[in-house]
Image 1 (tube, one colour):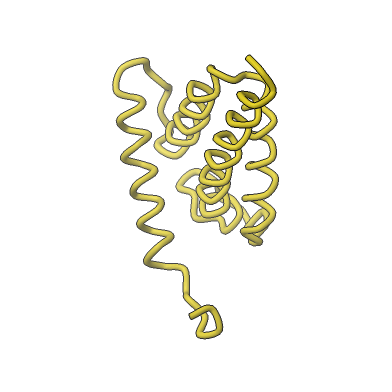
Image 2 (tube, rainbow, N blue to C red):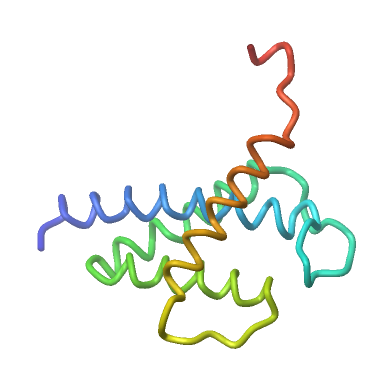
Length: 118
């Protein structure tokens, strides 16, 4: 694989990481998690998106073809932490997808839109 392929996987990793960053921001940055019982870690969305996106971009450049598996495992880990369940091999990806859709819908309908952004 050439450098162009690594760049493509880095971009895919950055996009995936940014989406996971939004999920982590919602759950742990704003303390909306079911299992985390504490103050909000970091309520600034930009910090979560930049750093988690950068981490997954780096992983995309290094892991290349295995990036999708790593993103799925990270999402599965978040899901299983939230439902307080040990991960299993069957049905984890579907449950992770359902959980991601629920999180994105919750973010979409609860985050206020400022008049200046319109």
